[in-house]
Image (cartoon, rainbow, N blue to C red; front, side, top):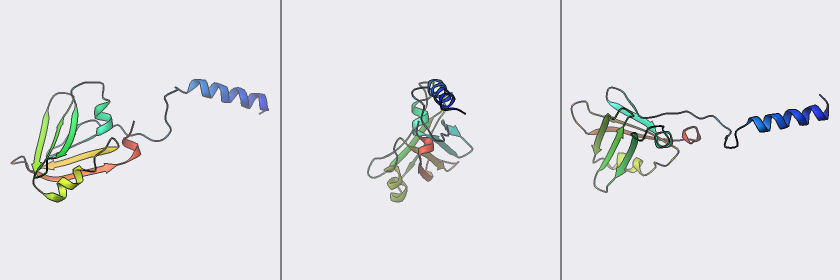
Length: 122
């Protein structure tokens, strides 16, 4: 290719790319329920097309609560008094994928996982 062809190809590519485009892989994870666990990306849930979804885990000092609602309005929640699980809640930010597991017979959190990664950030 000549220099002119390279310049024109670059100009076409630059105008074809949306101005807000970001490089890097992104994985969209809205609130999802399975038998006894729930997960979702904080960023994706916040930016979802609906105004229904949410996911959060909050440490209130002596206990912690994880809650989520999917786009159809179904909610799940669990509570924990476990200091280790509550400490994980403090690591949640806008790059977080939250996963919490609860006992099928009650509302006690059996597991809280927080994964922070650029793939969960819009």
